[in-house]
Length: 560
Ligand SMILES: [Cu+2]
Image (cartoon, rainbow, N blue to C red; front, side):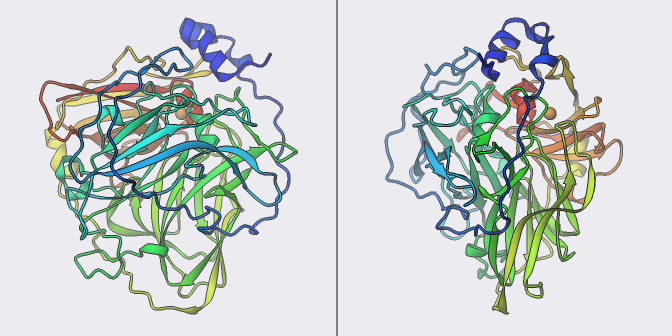
C-alpha cells in the first residue's frame, strides 16, 4: 500500500502534530525518481492555436449567483470556513464560467499526451483581463464574478485530489473570495468568486498588473498546481491602458499580441513520458524538464520591436535566475502584482516560486535567435546551488527578418509612489516576527504548523506594520502574504536590491538571500462597503508549495 501525502497528513499532523511525524525522515525519503526521457529542444512553437499563448477568458451572460458549498470534505477532514450566501454584485459586473476539467495535454511531440487538469481544460488556464474600477482606462472598469465548476476526475495520473479552491494570487479581494484553503468545492460542485478590481486604499500606486490564479486547497495545493491548475489574471488602469497607441499620460507599453504572459515551471516524467510527482518529497519537488506555458523548451516567433513579457515562476520549489543569451539587458517594469515607479535595466533577475517580473525586451537589433536562459542550478528544495554557465535555455525567441513600426513606449515614470516607506514608517506602531523553520520533516512558522483554529496576528486595517521574516535554518522560503502588497525595508539590515524596491506580494527569504528580511505592510478592507468591527481572515505561507502543504502556513485576521 502506498502512503499518499493525504495519508501522511491524516495520520501525522492531523492526529499528533509534530510528534507523529517524528518518523518524517523515513516517510519523507524521496522515492527512486526517474530521469525524464530526452526531448528535442525548441521544436514546439508557442501559439494561440496550441494554447502556448493562452486564450483570453470570455465573459458570459450574467447568471444568478449562488451560496457557497459547505459540504466538500478536505483531505484533513475539515470543511469550508467561509460559507456565504449568493454574492451581491455591482450592476455592470462581468460574469465568467470556468470548468475545471481533465484534458489530454501535449507537453512535447516526443512525449505521449498526459491527462492533466486545466481551467477550461487549458494548461495554463485562460488569461483573465480586468480593468480597474478605481482608475478605469477608456472603456471603463468592472468587477468580475467567476464561477468555477469542479468537473475533475482522477483519470490516468495519480497526481492531485479533485478538491479545489481558487486563489487569485496578488489580488485584493474579500476573505470568502480569496481561496482560503479550507473553502473548497468538490466534484460537481462550484463556487463563485467575486473580484472587486479596485486598487488597495484607492491609490493609483497600488493598481495591479500581473496576478495569477491557481489552486489553493488545503494539503494538496502542490499536486493540484503541478497537474495544471494555474493561469494568468492581468489588470489595466488609467495609465496602463493596455493599448500602446494611447497618447500620454497613458504609458504606451507594448500591448495586444506584444504583451505576453510566460509561466515557467519544472516537471518530471517517467521513462514512458508520463508526469511523475513524489508525494514523499516534502522539501520541494524539482523537475528536470522546463516548461514555458505548458510546453517543454518551446520557441516563440517575435517581430523586430518591443515586447512586454509577464514572467511568472509557477514552479513548486525551483528558483530561477534569468538571462538573455545575447547579453542584452531586460528593462524591468513590474515586480509581482505592481508596476515599478520607474523602469529598471538589469542584466538578469532572480525569480522565486510565485514571483512575477515584467520585462520589456526590444528585439529591434537582436540577432535572429535569442534564448531566455536559466543559469541558477538547484538540486534540492533547500536552496539554489550556484550560478552556472551556460545554464539551461528555456525559450528560444525566433526574431523576424525585417524591422516593423513600433508605436510602444517605456516612459521614465510608470506609477508614481505617493505612499512609500517614507510616508508609512512614522505611522508604524506594531512589529511582528515570524520565523520559518523545519521541524521533524515538516514545516513551521514560529514553531507551529498551520491550524485553522489558531490566528497568529490581528493587524488593524489601515495601520501599517513591520513584519520581520526570518529563516534561520539555511533554507530559502518564498513567503507570500495574501490580501495586501508590501515594501521590503531591508535584507539583513541592508537596503534591498533595486528590483525589490517596488511593491511585492511574495519575498524569498533565507539561504544566501537574507536570514532576516523586514517588510512594511498595511492591510485594507476590500469589501464594497467597508464596515468597522469585523475580522477578515486570510493566510500567509511559504510558496514552496510542498512546504505550504506540509503546513508552513499561518493566518491573520484584519480588524476593521
Ligand atoms: Cu518554504
